[in-house]
Amino acid sequence: MLPEAAHHHPAGLAHQFDNLEQQKEAATLGMWAFLTTEILFFGGLFMVYTVYRSSYPDAFAAASHELVVWAGTVNTAVLITSSLTMALAVHAAQLGQRRLLIVFLLLTMALGCVFLGIKAFEYYTEFVERHIPGLNYDFEPKYFRNAQLFFSLYFLMTGLHALHMIIGLGIMAFMLWWSVRGVITAEYYIPIEISGLYWHFVDIVWIFLFPLLYLIGRHAH
Image (cartoon, rainbow, N blue to C red):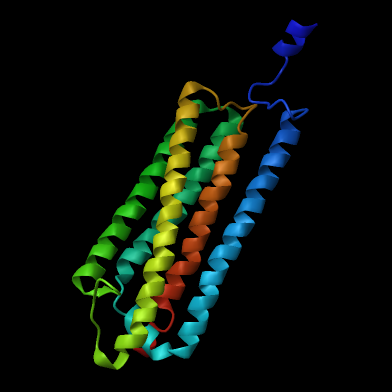
């Protein structure tokens, strides 16, 4: 009986679970619990930004006007597209279409790299324009002090987001390796689905960062 039971043991099922469905529910719950802590973390930053923006609206509008808006817009489109390719990767995994899964994971990773490349270009531009507090900061005298708050929050929030994107790329690389090896199947696709939740979260955070940092109050300048 033991060899037969082992033969019917689903691939990827951890010993502490009765079946893959139970394992999937536990993994999903764990990821949502983790994402909740991330929401609280970014929520605190958004609150700090909101308080300072309401206190110094003119300085924040003037500083926001210095950002490379087209780059932020392109990056928004890039991340929205990456969410689509990630969703398609999950769908391919559920259907057991390994080749499509690999293709969509590669596309998702490529789009993530494009995002980071554009963000690096933005950081370089801000460095050249002397907008980095504590390193080479300069701004018009009228808003010199308060604009520093904006740029400090800009680099803090977008930097943390970029770090999450780098972590996401690492996760996708691991999922790609598993997919190539055939670990991910139509029966065992939980890791892809859970990884997709993290990727979508990172994309959603940017959807909030983009208008807050690049768009709101620009007409006031």
